[in-house]
Length: 269
Image (cartoon, rainbow, N blue to C red; front, side, top):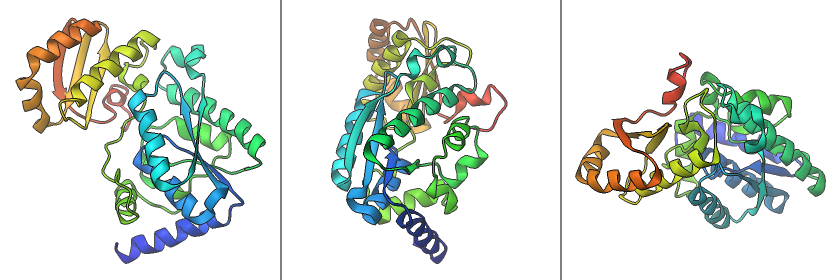
């Protein structure tokens, strides 16, 4: 770890140690995992990791949050959120994430009242400020603290710190919610989310880590890295059969790019 990152790490710990307890919004990704780890190291039992469960969260991701929290040692609570009952969310506008995060932080504030812990932390990092993230507005409105952002820690530095602190998921690919696979303006339904989850699980069982299955009606657009296209080609007959069972009659293979649907809006992703 270079000197600049050492100083940022010191600043991160200072920010958290000033808090009298903290609730960490814990998705199981590397950003929130680092946040949970540092919060637990700094605050001990005064830190709690809380995961929001809803139909937009893959079951495998939910189970991984439990496993990661257990390894860190932090107390872990799973709560239910109901963004999928919000018509504004289901209409899937370009600021869909705002409604999701608003629901999350509203529930976390209710949880904070029960525990007496006033501080809610998220895993927003410094790089996120240059991205298209409507959820940042929800965080600001609900006075959520973003220690990684405040310490000016970038995504690459998050991974470096996570590795330094022994988090095995330091190189875990980003995995936004299932709703992010549905093009903006196309309604979010529970059926679509289930189809996407089943399709992605099937592909991951071949050993692919970083992928997306975008839902375009009866067409699935599989986005994988260049190296994984060989796996797709080799197993295409099996994939085609399984996807047909799921409800996709057509398959398109494309290069993986995080935030691909944001590019259709001509915004940064």
